[in-house]
Image (cartoon, rainbow, N blue to C red; front, side):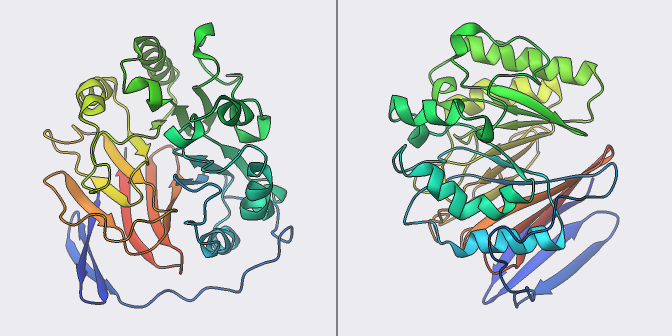
Length: 325
C-alpha cells in the first residue's frame, strides 16, 4: 500500500510519497485548467470499463460561505476525468427547504444533466427541521433512500435516514451520525450486518459515509470521541476500507496506525465550506491536511486499487493516496 503526505513550506506544497522508494514532488503552481462550461453542455458520463470514478465532499449546501468557483472546478474535473457519482458527507442544506432545489440545480445541474448521480448523507444542519430532512430523504434524486440496493433489511423505525448502494466495485454505506453520536444501537447493528453481507458477497470495497468525524485535528469541532470509541474497534474488525466524514470544514487524512485508524482509512472531507487555517496544529493521528482553500476528493476505484486525489478550487492536487489489494 502506498501512502503520501503533504507538508506546507512557504508557498509550496511538498508531497512525500512512501512506498518502494521515497520521492519528493514540488507543486508550487496550480495546474492549468480549461474554461468553465455552461450548464447542460457537459458530455455524457463515461469511464474506463471496470473502473468507478466518484466525488466525495461535505458541508457544501445553500450557504454564502461556499464559493461557486468550486462547482465550476468540479465541471472541469469531470471534463478531464468523467465521474458517475457524487457522495456527500452531510450538511447539504444550510438554508431552507424552499431554496434548496434551485441551489442544487445551480451548483450541480450541469453534472446531473450529464448523468452524474447524487447520494446524500445527513449532517446536523440537514435535520435541524423536520421538513429539511424529509425533503432530502423523500427525493429520489438525492440517493437511494428506499434502500432498494441494500443487502440487508433496514429497520422500519429508521425513517429512511440511512441506506446503502453499490457501484461496482464499491459498496457505499451512508449512515446518520446525528443519532449514532447518542448511541443508536439499531443503526449500528444494521450497519454491521450490511458491511458483513457486502464482504460475504465479495464486493471489493466497503466505504462508510457519515457526517461527524471520529478523528479530526480542526479547532472548531475536532474529533468526536464517542464515535471513535464506538466505531473504530468495530470497523477495523469488520474490515471496512474507507470512512468519509465532514462537519469540520477542512480536509484531513488520518493515519491508519493502531492508535488511530487501525487499518481503516478515515478522511475528513468538509472543505467545500472552508474554515481557513482551522487546523492550527496537526495531531498524532494527522497524516495530511489542507485548509488553505476549498477542496473535494476524486476517487478512481477498480477491484484491486482505490486511488484518491484531493483537488482544490483552482485545480491544484493537494493530496493523493492509494489503497491496493
